[in-house]
Image (tube, rainbow, N blue to C red; front, side, top):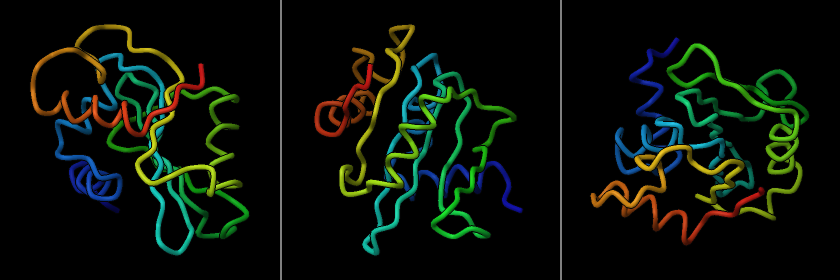
Length: 141
């Protein structure tokens, strides 16, 4: 079983975050519920969902049910909140992967505070997050 730090590093690599701070900015600080898509060359996908309050989980294909089921893994947290509507949106990524592209971010909720993922704070991490938002993000709300 992987430790928290090992899982975080794997998520950073899989979902193309710049570093640990970039991942934390995405998942923490009341940054709002959202998910990020990872597409592979073989057509498979993964989804990194965050409730925006430090809860994060990765959705992938099931080891038992293959592409007919999902495996969900908490990422360095003890719980992660999600609504049935958000699960339906994530399910759509798996059933219609061609409608999404690698690195795309779907935002369900706006951030609650200004130091969140889309903050105007001037640092490289925020500048990159803003580029992500401008280039890859679609708001569902």
